[in-house]
Amino acid sequence: MAKNISFTLKYWKQNGPKDEGRFDTREMKNIPDDTSFLEMLDILNEELISEGSEPFVFDHDCREGICGMCSLYINGHPHGPATGATTCQLYMRRFNDGDVITVEPWRSAAYPVIKDCMV
Ligand code: FES
Image (cartoon, rainbow, N blue to C red; front, top):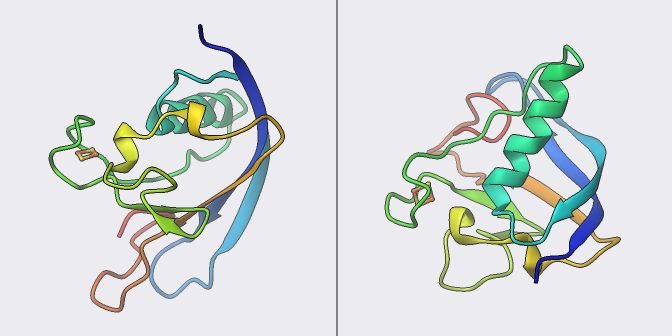
């Protein structure tokens, strides 16, 4: 049975490769733990858009663990804490109520940041 968790989300905002970038922070409340990580980011964006703010930009495509586009660094690990799984196959049940979750782009000179976590 799913339970809801609340946590602090720190997500990387960057306006192009020359911008130095920064973290924005939001308290995410009552997110069902059977929500996928990308669905949680969709919820974040629904909140941001409803407030008239710019959405958080991140890469994704298939959301089925096939294409590899969902390349995020989560709490310092590629694709987060679930080894052998892509970000789109990561579910919020991997996190605990009260956690601080940090989302950053894959940092590589070969893949400059286009916007936020899109490289
Ligand atoms: S979006 Fe395709 S593997 Fe995650």
